[in-house]
Image 1: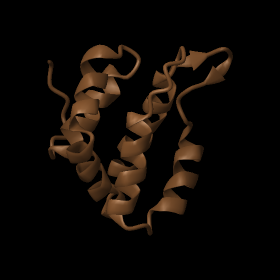
Image 2: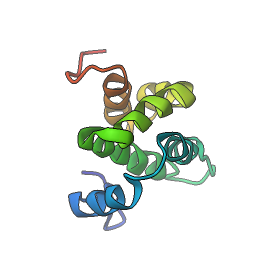
Image 3: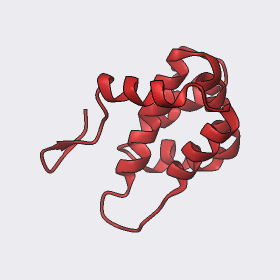
Image 4: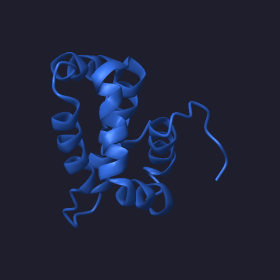
Length: 114
């Protein structure tokens, strides 16, 4: 897990579950729009990848839970495809999780070497 300045960047399973309970009844498109926006936020500050990494963890948790939140990951992959590819290729802290999001959105549950 990534840790920066003593605080975990990666949400724990309890935080992910609380967020899922708050979001699972939302329309997949509205949820996907909000998550896509979090992936595209670029502040130019040191460590701006932290928000994207947290969002990637949220996407993977929502996919695992299924239902409308799993549909949202497919929508995010379409809306933010270029951003996900950038994170996978150019941001070492986000690379592995971004690749997993792209794979899961494509219906593949097994990671493949790049």
